[in-house]
Image 1 (tube, rainbow, N blue to C red):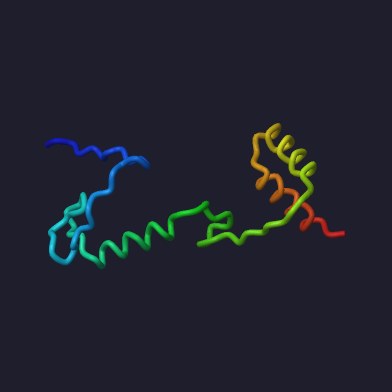
Image 2: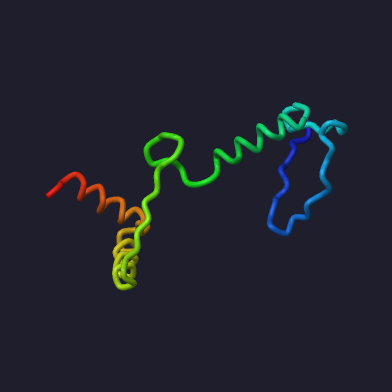
Length: 103
């Protein structure tokens, strides 16, 4: 039996015409018929799976955004690069440390 290989998809890959899922018999790799309901379920799974992984193991991790002076960001970037981390990781560690040891 021939192994089926998945084609490489890029931004330049042409998009074909829309299919009328109620009329056309299109099948997924496992043989399931692609219906409007199945397509909606797949879309919902993709929407839930996008974004960064949760830090706490739950569905989402809340975000905190704040502004700093350009010099602070530059120094944070240097420290993060030296430690092999992202600025977000560095900021998380600093906030967690501060909260763990309140004044």
